[in-house]
Length: 328
Length: 241
Image (cartoon, rainbow over the protein chains, first blue to last red):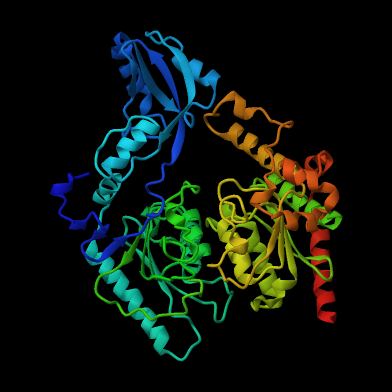
């Protein structure tokens, strides 16, 4: 994690564009609608705060909900402080809460379990002040998305090269006399840098053989083959030393056209880390807030699995256009 | 509706079969609507195939394609019975194939694509012209119980069982069924009839009792053989049409 001003990557934080070529895709229509979580609080006398704070620190790492953007202590009056203890995700019921607080060295009362706290801070300071009054006091640390963008790691050279390859491949398909759709994807294994390329096969196989589904199945088939060879002793040294590939965990997936609802969800099931596409699909696409039904599958709040998504907005890679309603 | 229950019983038996073979207890059958006979079945195969997308629905779709070819037009005659609501990926796949209808037991609160999280069946981005009705609540409690059996077992196997509470099997309480997430009022009446209208507004099951025998029996290879036979008979019947 580097400080924003020391990051060697060029990032336009306002528009979410990295190195003038990768546009961060996220559910921008909903970022400033608070995603509220329920949380436990207790009331204490001001003198107890020096005991309460170490206690809160000792449990906060266990909490699946992060409250680093939240002020833990809210002053009710000169005599009473309200302290945020944990989310209800972490402590589901009163029995567990009592267990957690059994034996603490401070006095407290008025246990409340229905505090509503925004899971993430808003994008502007003005909204932060509004939310602090309406829900629970927040800390202003800048637009939380700036930090997210700042923490991403990019190898733009590599990205450009992989995208150029799939674009070329798709133009080749377009130029050939087959009925094949010019949709191509690349699956990049984490760390080892191995790449699998996959194409769309619905012209002569199943209508569901979109390039992403084909790629996911190919990764599984190759891993099964490797495991079989390791088991029966025919594996190469390289294969033996390879770590097990679990689904497509932490893969980067490159694709020529914005994926449809089936493929974007398949990427969640496969636990990929990042998806970069070139051509948006205004009708069938499921990632951009402006595409299709605005699903933003990778950043949908109701699906708590996520992956990073970027659209290539650098030099024109000349990926062939296809019917905007066609699912990719 | 009684037909729906009959078919869902087969799906539930299959899910129990999967559970008894250490797989997730989610299963489905595809029924040819005109013949009213099973044309294919599916069980979750994510463990066997080491891919995250080998859901029961895909296994059934592949069976149909292997027999009848990849032209999707046959799906307009096919109704899917699945114990748990299809996930978004499967709901999208079924819509792209142009399935006639989807009937399921319980909702899928994490990934459901037919009402719980998204309603792919009547969206505009996934092949707009293909729409289908999805009907929840058929043997819902049985489907939920099978999932609970599975989670209790998993927790028992875990090196560090979470809490005592998780280990206790709840046979009494079931979450409400919020019908309007899945069906409009009109669609509900069409499926279940006026006599069950109250269930819709009260978010209650249409069937209150649980068929314990169904989920507590074991289904062995003879069950699978019978299912295969029915599928072969369907094939013969379709060839003669």
